[in-house]
Length: 130
Image 1 (cartoon, one colour):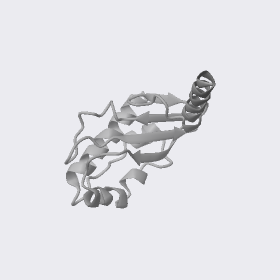
Image 2 (cartoon, helix red, strand yellow):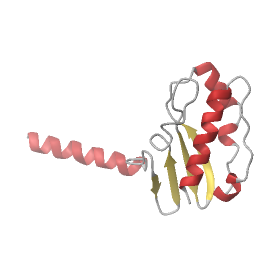
Image 3 (tube, one colour):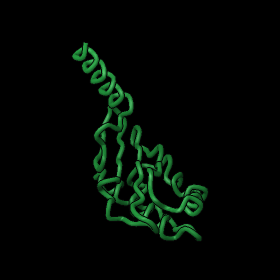
Image 4 (cartoon, helix red, strand yellow):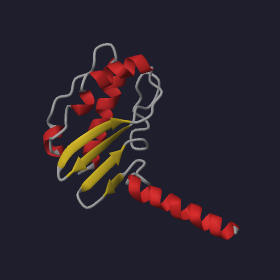
């Protein structure tokens, strides 16, 4: 009975990894047929905002950026919300990585440390696509 339970748990966990497409992507790109995800949790561990690392996940589908998502961090929520509200995380949507690399991204007033760190993580993710 225990062996059956352990096998069932292992099967469920492996399914979660397949469905999420982010299993094992900490700090490196995960590739699918037309999808590429870069997670800067490990790659950008030394990029510090006001209170610590500010990792992001950059998603590319069919050659264009579809989403940049802020990952869990220790930034002060009300200040980090300014980064989110500024549209910084959506500024590159629909651009190719090459177009994104030549796009000027500006820090957010009132959340300068946090937004600068996010921009550095975005640049790092773009550079890792080469």
